[in-house]
Image 1 (cartoon, rainbow, N blue to C red):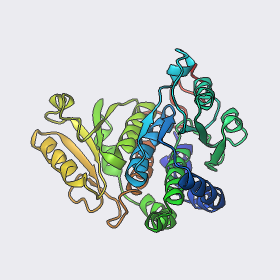
Image 2: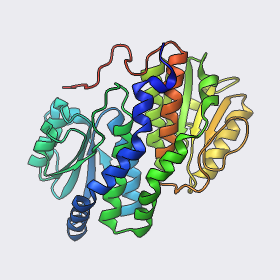
Image 3: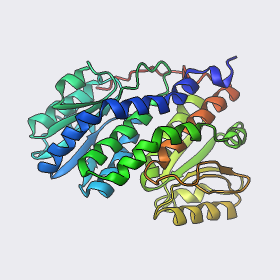
Image 4: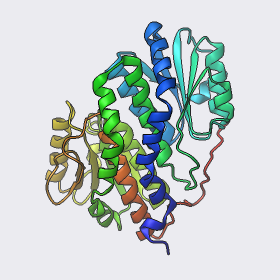
Length: 344
């Protein structure tokens, strides 16, 4: 049996700080130039296209683009192009395709259709010589290096960092650049956070909710996927603003809930929701800057809200790797899965 620190998932998540530090430096010139072009001729809208963990990164990108750039951002369903062959009106839009491998046929077909429909195609991709990279008008390399664990970790976090760097350069935002400059240090500091209480509490469970909002919604989606993928645990992600619309009826005595929050306008309502869950007898863990108590999951207190999800996800990956082993799984080789999923 592996020890938690021996898993590729652990090692690759641990490497994220160094990966992102190198990525930010290597991509600076590229994104400065791209940002200047986008400022000079901004798109009328942004459309993202991705699957799996990359789509969770796209959910984060939606909130970043809309709050920082003021440009409406929507998610395209790959099957609209790959299965239904339906033409879309994408003139003067920015089509952002996100992929680790850059090989999935449906994503390639969607990018081809978007370009034919008049969109500028931007690829965020880890494999720089992939078909998607060759097809795109512009490529932002994730520079995460080879990722051997089936469970994506460093490439996911590198995608979020690329979204932030693109936005900072596009907007010319010194505050966002400062948040990026400290991000590798914050990630190294955050790696030491103790989230063992989460793993201990979930070892014998079968179902749980993961809740986030705003910048943290993509992190909740990613955590729920990884719990399914690596731990054999049925986890569902919800927005803190949506969970009351039906799903909350399932939450009662002993029901596990993981809450991810950041210190912005969503914090108070999310913490109030966690308190409501506790009042119903649920077992609730809260990851939020400054959170205290027996079921608080540590995060540094002074984090920028926009980068908090990266630290939360990184700490979650470490906890999930250990939980997977404790539940009798190998997080690097989930059953029935493989590294590259080529959806038609």
